[in-house]
Amino acid sequence: MENRRILIFTGNGKGKTTAALGMALRASGHGMRVKIIQFIKNDDATGEVHAIRNMPGIELVQSGRGFIPPPSSPAFAGHREAAEKGLQLAAEAIASGTYDLVVLDELCTAVACRLLDEQQVLETVHRAGRDLCLVMTGRGATAAMMELADTVTEMTSLKHALEKDMPARKGVEF
Image (cartoon, rainbow, N blue to C red; front, side, top):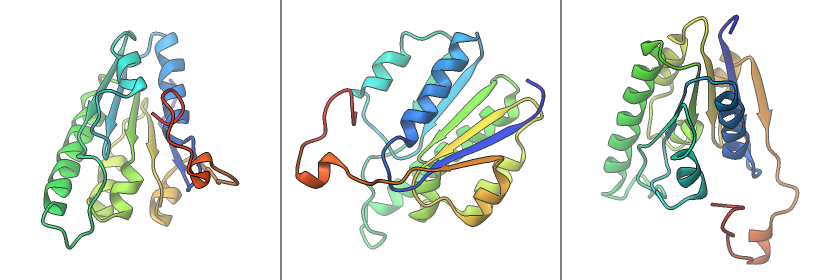
């Protein structure tokens, strides 16, 4: 790789994680080393977790606790701790020089929901080395995060099956 690249996939539409996982698939096909840290998700039964177990060069860690309760909930502190642990893992992956691509899935959501401090996240991202490609996903990317990125894509939902009370489908939503 020739220089650092930072991408953000944000917005309320479907496809943010899917786009990032597509990049991981592409990188794996080129023999690159990939680290994926999922900040909100905590379900090892998803299709991506099963698939990645069989893909060379890709590591996936889930540091989330699932759906985020309101800040007034006693459980919120545990979600914040899990997100902070994920950010520490991200900092280690970024600093290690081991990876060509680091995906921070739902990092933008973690900041938007106040699980993580925006300034800490920006400082972590600033440490990305010259050859690293860093991808951040999730709803609510902040202006400062988007300013730091080289590429920002906003997924916009025009229509979604869940709005018609159609249940989430294996292989499509999980």
